[in-house]
Structure formats: structure tokens, C-alpha cells
Image (cartoon, rainbow, N blue to C red; front, side, top):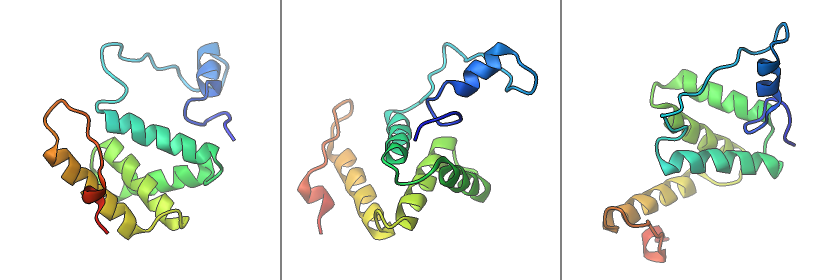
Length: 129
């Protein structure tokens, strides 16, 4: 289901660099600034792409969910991204808001017990019941 306009696609970028009338304007990336500031941002992006590729939602549905989230709050962009993904996943019945909250708390618990610089491992006692 990937195609022009989908995250990770090159169709729009190719059109922009070609300079054709009506195409997107090419934006030079800031080379010394990372695309993702934290690993979880890249993971949220990757989960969104994977769920779309598995056919769980369309790009139009994703764009609507993200747009609604951006309009609803002024938190940092990838927090909006994650909130939109959680909302879309719950609305599709792929998970419940309660289950999402339970796992969010589990990750927070696991992070608090993990020494700085170490990989966070989610364990069964973190999830509870």
C-alpha cells in the first residue's frame, strides 16, 4: 500500500527536485540535526508505517488522525504523532485505551528501574494484569 505521499516514499521528493510546475518545493535537510531526537520517535514512526503496510489503516485515515491531534493540542510533534497513533489503533479496535494505558505505565515502570544508559526491558511484573 505504499505509494506517493506515504512516509518513506520518494515520489514527492523526486517531483520536488525535478522542479516541475506545481510540484512541491524541495527543502534542504539540516544535516547536523537528527530527524528523530529520541529513539522512541523513530519507533513510533516505524510502527505507523508497519501498521499501514499491514493494511490496518489507510494514509487518508492516518492523515486525518494526525491532523486532528495537531489541532487538538500543542505538545511536541512526535508526542502528537504517538497520541494520534494510539487514538487510531483504539478506534480500529486493535487495542483498547485501557490496554494502551497499561502498557504506557509498564514502560514507565521499567524505565524507572533501569539504570541510565541501559536498554529498557519490559518484564511481566511491569505489565501486571
